Image (cartoon, rainbow, N blue to C red; front, side, top):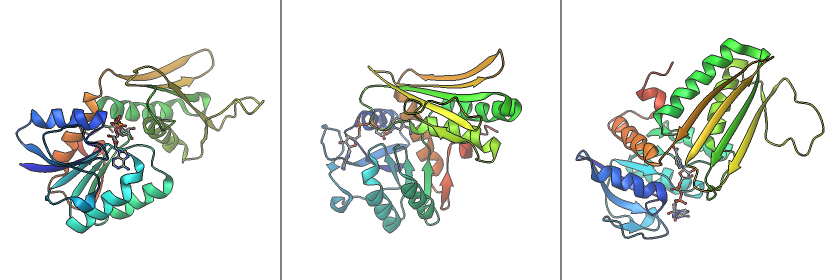
Length: 251
Ligand SMILES: NC(=O)c1ccc[n+]([C@@H]2O[C@H](COP(=O)([O-])OP(=O)(O)OC[C@H]3O[C@@H](n4cnc5c(N)ncnc54)[C@H](O)[C@@H]3O)[C@@H](O)[C@H]2O)c1
């Protein structure tokens, strides 16, 4: 039985992860971390200093502000971490990479298999279509999302950019400029509204033809299921930085 501390337990994703774990006899949530208490079946603490249970893995869908506390606890207690929160700064991502030298960390901006598949397809398309096609990414999410662009849009842009030696520049705002699109850009655009779970389009626009690679999530459950799959994968692993490519071969 894999014992889990669920960080962000009272949130929307926290509830889906709790539901997913309840249906799975191999995994059990022993405690949650959240500043709110949503009446879950396990005890909820508002920070790691109050925890008095041990666990094998932390699953985190919360807020970037909690990163230091998660890594401090995980390194002190040799606990593996599934990090699904988005909106980390570059400095925080460096901290995650550094921590992964001493504990196993699974880190991805998107826990769905479908998004990880289109990431690989976008990379393949960029490699084939090259500089003749302009790349624009559109992401759509619900009106409660706090970070923009989505971590997934960045993940898709990075996958495309890896085919250009990382030389493409990300353009988030054409409003403040009056100039035509540069050849060296990847445009990234965010739409926020209603209850949209998560939609991503990677558009390759060439001369007289357009290729669009799309993914649409119909429920947040797909991310919860992915995080539980990641937790099971991480159990017993050596320190290191893992992602969906470590589980599925998307190459
Ligand atoms: N990687 C993925 O596949 C994926 C998928 C969906 C959501 N996410 C990310 O997961 C995160 C959570 O998403 P959500 O929709 O559940 O959001 P949410 O706002 O419903 O839940 C976040 C929870 O974190 C708690 N929290 C925030 N700050 C805290 C603090 N300082 N101390 C203790 N608790 C705190 C909140 O009380 C809340 O219950 C976001 O960053 C979101 O972008 C990632």
